[in-house]
Image (cartoon, rainbow, N blue to C red; front, side, top):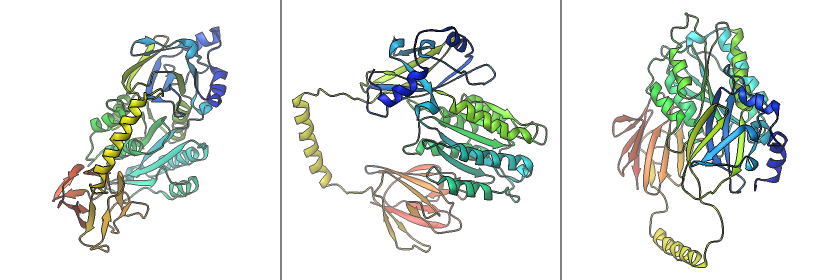
Length: 436
């Protein structure tokens, strides 16, 4: 086993030490098993880590699982139990990525909303050094209250100041859920264990995203990880609108909680925290060969699978490969020197920045009204985080990220659109043109 000594020392406390009646009893309790993500070891070793949840039929985390309880197959090949290490997420020092979406439409006013705010503040207080948290609010639009880069102190202050929008006439619930998942998908250097908590009365009105689109984004495609979306519903009108929350959670292998009284709201937030922070990390040696792998994990009678593309690692390259690589790099450098160094630029056609030009010099750039965006568009009609540009070589694509007034390319309201030189982009009430 080539796992890092620190991780092995921690996980070995709960790892394989021979089968025992206590461990056998723990495995028998598992009636829900979710394999959410398969990732290569972050410390450069030829190992793989699995992030999984093992729960009773009531959603309680199963305690004290050992390597002898776990069966792992990699492309059908059984991994030796002696090579498996298992431990709790919080013991492994891996942390969690948490995205919370709060319904601030006027139907949420009163004690339920205040209880939810208190629960979010408790999450912030519980965060360890490896955890990352973002908070969103949605009513007739989606706003980022705190991003993953916001400090704990600033996040705490912004949540305290959050209020119900008493003027909102619509609730873009699905847009809020989509944004909460999308922030995790687009995040950089975030912990692999990730989940969403959404608090709402279940009513959606006016979303551009659909329930199916949110589920598809959270479940992932190809080798993307699953992002469970836990929902907490409070409906003072009898619960008839909570079906969409149930479908959202079930579609992402998560749990939906329905609070029949405000006092239950905080306890459900606590239950979700306990489920996720008491989940497991399983680690074992693997051939990181750059190929597609199907991973199956089984505990007792329960099993789940995930597909992943391993990176290619390992030394021992032949000298001729090294020389060939040097030739290729030299040739590529000569070609690259004759190519434009950036993906192009945006030129402001109006507003306070009229005539200014912004070079697209990063693979991803955020556009919005707040000063921490890569491209700041100062206008009251522009959302705090309005859109994103993704630049891959000479290919540039613009994506709306749940703005209130939409993103337009050549007069068409778009959610995602590739850009060509000369395209006219409208962000809120400001026009820009893309040039290369």
